[in-house]
Image (cartoon, rainbow, N blue to C red):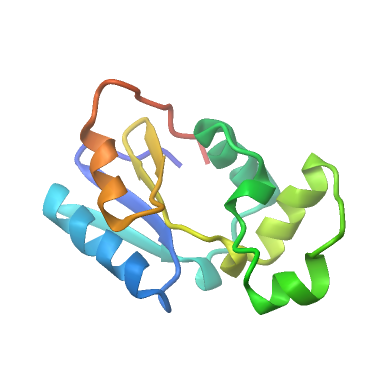
Length: 130
């Protein structure tokens, strides 16, 4: 999914106050902010693969390991890369931080103010074509 340079797309957890703060910061950066709650997103493992590739991260790195579902069903198990992508695609609520995309840049927003990295031209990352 490409975004326009004036639009910010955010994948987030609507139950998280920190994620809501990230959205508030994003709304200060761009007139158009499109929000996708993880629980409502039906992204495929291919979509997640493109996002993770842009972030240069392994799927397991993005998971909230304290989440009850992770603790009960995933902790201690090992999957190949494709398996981890399927875990994320089927359980996006396990993501620990929102992901923001603006134009061709992708940022993992571990802190609400990380969304400002979208305007930093020092280290742009290409957004995936979802």
